[in-house]
Amino acid sequence: MKWQISKEFDFCYGHRVWSQELNSDYSMDPCLKCRHLHGHQGKIVVFLEASELKNGMVTDFNHLNWFKAFLDDVLDHKFIIDINDPLFPTMLPHFADKQNLRTLEQGYKIVDLTLIKDEPSYIYEMYEGFVIVDFVPTSENLSAWLLKIVQHKMDKLNIKVSHLEFYETPKSKSIVHA
Image (tube, rainbow, N blue to C red):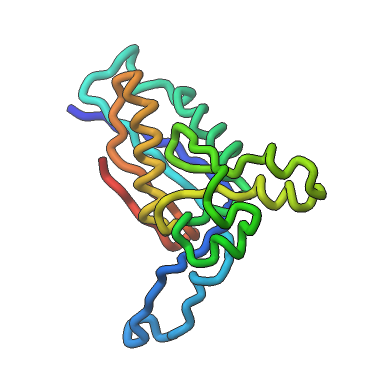
């Protein structure tokens, strides 16, 4: 037998898919809307599985509370930008040279805010709102990145993440399997 549990998480984020291309024969609209700066109310569903239960459970649902905290602290109401986005220097002019970025354990970067502590508060607030990744932040790439983060943490409990669903909108999602 195999058991599976899941837990859902919501967060708001912004991004830009600078690499978007469309085939107008299929899209019915040649407008590259995802190249614009825009936002989503995202939803993530994490699926954990086990072939044996411990204390009658795959694991306690509370063992995913850290992931909710990660989403709230790192991604909620932030703008996810690819460091290779041609607009990077325009959107982050104080860090256009891509230096003075802090790399965090989960594979993303943030700007070193100590370098702009004397700037007006609106400049500081703008920069603290960026999460810098090294991939185009599509739902597929975001779901793969998040699955890797969850699996790394759940490895310590010997729990397998079978897959992760990333809803960009209520009707559009990507699914990545481990």
